[in-house]
Each structure stands twice: as C-alpha cells, then as structure tokens.
Image (cartoon, rainbow, N blue to C red; front, side, top):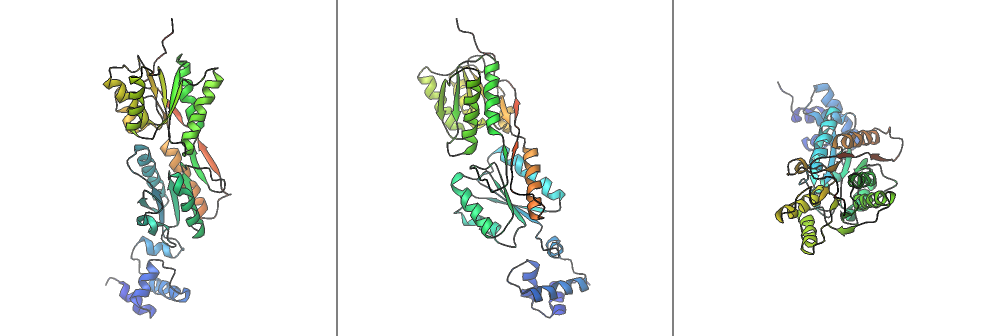
Length: 335
C-alpha cells in the first residue's frame, strides 16, 4: 500500500498541516516537531518528491533566477545554459520575470526557505540595490550576472565591455576607417559606459577623434531614429559602432530603406551577437558575449556560496569575441 502524508501525520502524532509545512520547509515549524516528521518519514520510507528528499540536508534543491525580460535572445541563451548547469548539479531552476523590484509577483522567490540561492540577471540600475539589500537581509546566497552598477562586495559575472568596445572600434580602424561614430546605450548602465570607454580608447590609441557620439536605448527604433536623423541631415558617418545589436539593426534598417548600401556606403558593428545578427541581411558584424561561459561561471560561484566554499566576493570578467560577418568593409580612401 502506498504511504501517504496522512500516514506520516499519524506516525509522528502531529497534524497533516504540520507535516505539510515540514515538507514545504516552512520556518514556522518547531525544530522538535520537524524532527518527529523526518523520523516518521524515515521509518515509513516515505519519499513524496525531490523536495522532501532534499529536506534532510536542509536544502530546497531550487535555484531562483530573476530578470526583467525574455525578449532578448542573449538573455534567453544565458537562462538556458544556467538551467542546464543547475540540472547537472541536481537543482531545479525557478524563473521570475519582473519589470521592477516593486513588482510583488517575484517576491515569493526571495522568501526564506523557498530557494537555496538566487541569480540576478541584468537588472535595471534603479533596482539593483533594493534586490541586494533584500537578499543580504534574508541571508540568501546570490550572485549577479551583467550587473548595471559596480558592487565591490557582491560576486558578479560580467563580460569585459571595455574590451568589447575597444575591439569593435579597432576592427573598423583596421579596415581603414577614420570617421567612426558611436551610438551608446543609456548612460546609467555600466555596460554602456564601458563600451563607450573602449570606443574612445581605441580611437585615442590610433590618433583619431570621435566622429560623433549619440545616446540611444537598447532598442531597434532607437537606432532607426538616430540613423534617419543623420541621413536627413546628410551627415551619415561612414562607420558606426552601436552599443548593442538592436541599435545596429535599427541603423541597418534605416539605411536599407533609404537605399544606402551596407557595407559599401557604411560599415556597422553591433554588440551581443543576438540571433537576429546572423539572420538579418547583410549579416551583422558584432561582439559576441559567450553565454555558455557566463552561465557556467555564474552557477559555479553561486554553488560555492551555497555550500560555504566561496573564497569571498569576486568580480569575474569574461572576454568577448569579435565576430566578423557582412556589415563591415574597408573604408574608402579620400581623394
């Protein structure tokens, strides 16, 4: 006969509600009653699910992950890689998609005894401090991936955005371009500032000055609008480094609509290597963020924090990779 939760309640001399609370790892159960339930489960050989099995070692077996959007193929790749990694270690991944810290829908993920640890993936700068304070207060291990601000006392995994911006710009310089514009992302994002800093450093090392710098958003319409303004004013630069692929694709769309040839008339480089980068025509030259390495390192650091084997908070930078495709070509020499 199959053993049920009612048999455990009878064996332990406690109510079904109390047994249920123990199975859900609730902190409201007295330690003495918790031990009675665990002993009854052991004697009855009761194994309802993975959560109950993990209870004996004081773990939920669940890793929480929160992010602001799934409408991004890079984030999607990181989440998939993280899910594969945590599964290898016997954990389940609980996903929370929330626009802001104020969104109460994600709060259950941050309650004690619900998760063993949390991964914060590319949150908005306005919310990062609130999330960090909440997790520290509740003593929940966590790490950050693609953080928007610098947090010296938090373990973070981030691509070397400075190096990416430098390599993107250097690629255009190596092709002979001397007038290179940059469409930056929002200034409050650390990644935006670092990519722009890399752009400026590459130009300075080559003895060049910025052709033009515009600030946009990480969206296709942003790149489209800026490019159309340049075209209307007759000031489209011959080479453009965009802070992300969506901006770059917006620029390409504007150029193609106006009969401007890519890369004959203008060379364009993006950042991220979104799925669309290799599906759009011409295919976009871009800086790839290695989702597999980012995810693997993030999971490794979080599990070290959960198991108390971490050597301390660290900032880990992963090198990006220049992917040369069809949207860049040698610059035209001036007569």
